[in-house]
Image: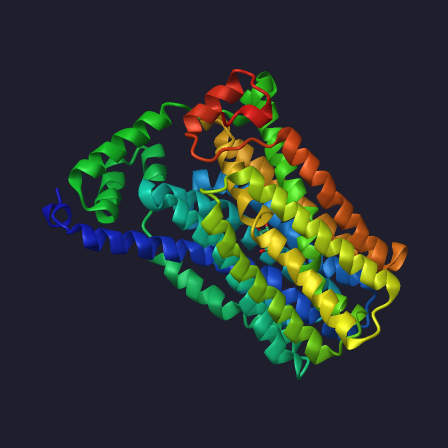
Length: 463
Ligand code: BGC
């Protein structure tokens, strides 16, 4: 028995935990970098390869397709290989995908490179939150999971800024390729992570699991209690697919998770994430201004995430969602109206930018972080992996549809109607939240599960 570690002061174990979680949250940073990096590059890629809007849509959205496949694969990988090795694989794919994107010699190779990046993101977005939840002690778990969403937004901002700096020379290959550097740092960091104690227990490696818990927690009583808890939980086997076929109540919670992710994506947020410079172009701005306003979008997204972090356990989930959808509908509605009327003067341009930023605030303070939180709260324990897998898969497929249709919508129904379409969807989501979304603030997961399984209406499973 390692008495030295047992005696480790609480301070040291706290540092280990924070270090571990920060490292895993870097997965969020990589996710954000890859979401954000493409927006600044598309116009240069389009000029260089002389391709249509349709090909650009595929270059943007092949990544999301890869991510959907990666997320499904990761639920198997993270059980078979373990969380740590899945994250290592994700990191290696990040580096390879970034290098290949920078070197791409044709639109097809670029699409293939973005597919590889997507696989990396799918693996990382499934595995990192799982790992975080398994290594963070109860009292800091919420904060650690919010850190993850914050890291996504910071990654997007950093990518927008790096794109802006490189846009003066139109160096799109550098924009895409430079992400290999944080990718390599992420790989180094992940190599230092301990294995997840829960996964070690799942594989019957109890002694190793206890060893990791000692390094993370320091206090022997806590270590033994947590080891016993994990063993107890593992007695509830995961039987997602069977449960889905035979239990109507579980089908309802899976359906709700899928619906929540559809709502998050069809707010239209990623239209701005992927095509912001193009949107600013339609408002009449030149390339430099387009890039700086895109960076401002990224900054607004980071800052407004703090509103969600501050309010989530005070206001509760539903009031934040209503507010967010209403703000988004108003922002997009006005942007559409301005585009309809024609944006002529400088004042009109600035006003339209402000309305777009208001839309970003609406998303970042609500659907962005909250949907991920709700999706992990509503699934019963024995179907949790399956349920979260289904909703994450939906997130990426819907993300792909949004990315793959925006330019076609602009060309087909026009700028104003495209924005009005997304504004109307946000109004619809207020109604769906009222009708179907439960309030889960301050309720234990066990209570939510009991209510769900007793057949209470979905909007009441948090009472
Ligand atoms: C969403 C992403 C989005 C990001 C923006 C996340 O919660 O899932 O699709 O790009 O927020 O901050």
